Image (tube, rainbow, N blue to C red; front, top):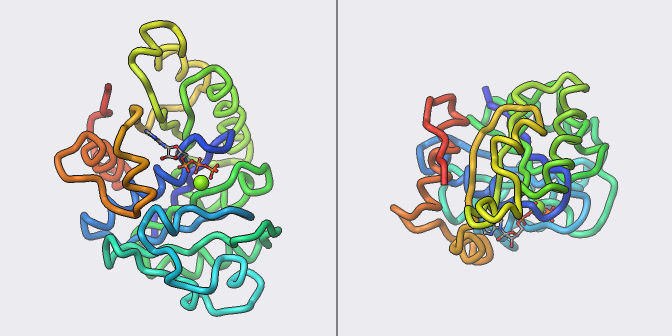
Length: 242
Ligand SMILES: Nc1ncnc2c1ncn2[C@@H]1O[C@H](COP(=O)(O)OP(=O)(O)OP(=O)(O)O)[C@@H](O)[C@H]1O
Ligand SMILES: [Mg+2]
């Protein structure tokens, strides 16, 4: 039975797909069977992030509109045989939300983890809430980022969502020291949900995701995402503090 996790955010470009890919990779490397789904009605990136570009012609839109069977659109990542991905549609389309929930439910016996990289539209944020165990809200710790994260957390909680936690991404110590961004305790108080993880600005992340390769072993990036993966497994791993 899958653990279903959604990765959400209040605004675009804060690192949802990065977090989805790198946590998924670490879970797969630890032996778990993992499916990543990019629930976007437009541009895709997760296929590239996990080294599966152009391995399938079908995508999520094709599944949800009955143009293919689910398995026709499940691609295997070149990074691990335990890691599969369903691509977002390449063009902007409306995705039928009810069919999406039915599709995810039908895959629950096949995977240990299903991680859904969810776009920022209100409709998408409201989707899958009743079957999701972890709602991870990725936020950059700047003032607008914090306000938007709070909005998403409130929206998920008011729909009855559980496991709502925040991941601060692209955190910079120098910005905190110079008061460019609030300290993380203050940011957390403003958002009002527990912390799931802290990810600093990492120089190797873009190289890994744009080439679809794993972070090198023993690097800070590898350690941080391994810790986040273990936390998703329910293990009591200390929060990585920068
Ligand atoms: N911790 C980090 N350190 C450095 N760069 C990062 C970090 N996290 C994400 N990035 C970079 O930020 C950019 C946006 O990341 P990503 O595509 O994951 O965001 P997103 O929230 O999925 O965007 P969208 O809303 O468009 O889907 C990418 O270029 C990625 O390499
Ligand atoms: Mg994305």
